[in-house]
Length: 330
Image (cartoon, rainbow, N blue to C red; front, side, top):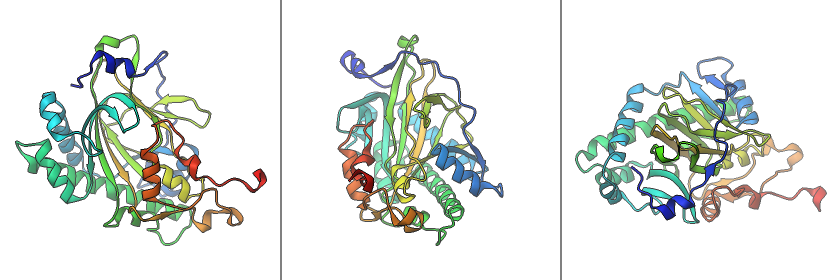
């Protein structure tokens, strides 16, 4: 259970009108569909967000990690703290990043390389670290492959060569991808209001692969700025376009703004793989996707953008610092 004092509770934002209609128009893409490439393109352009089915990730991998995560988050707070503090990796509680953002959430943030997972497993699961290590390693491998499949289909849809132009960034040994387990406990004391579990933001990486249990809470922002609630589906995965992908496609794909609302009655558990390039990888609009050679963004390394994002607040528009001024603006 998240342990929050009254001052900490006072820092967390509430929604005055929390009741949201579940959004039924979210694209659902069957990866075995011959039209998957065109459907993926439309989803990335219109929403920056979609659900994939027939994804090929075994149900056992999902169930195994969820069981391990639930076991950890059910431990006494003093035991969970032994896996922290999150700086930035490890166990965190309430505090999101170094700049004052807080939420009704506790989490584990992990590097995705096997050595780091193995080291962290002993802090997270002293009783059976090997079981936790295997659950995380196998799951991360499965969702990374899924992310790469989606990225390669998108490259085909954009008619870009080589096919692995995006996916190679995730498969690189120097990839800076990370993995996060979020737990949002129920908050029955506030049934008339709903707490912000994780404040609105975009993901800075290339792509995020998210799965949660059957509890509602995830919301995305549409192009008109309105917020809609995403129906939960514990058997499928949700894919989110990140800031870096928006830059690579010169703004053709949009990085989706999203947030999580804590549930008053049910616990929510989510698992997110954030696919990122190596720290020194250069990120800039691909020449084939710039009209008349005009790019909307300055070139930067992932390290530069990551550092900039880490200095910002969650709700900040992180990309604005890297946008080029239009020639018409002088």
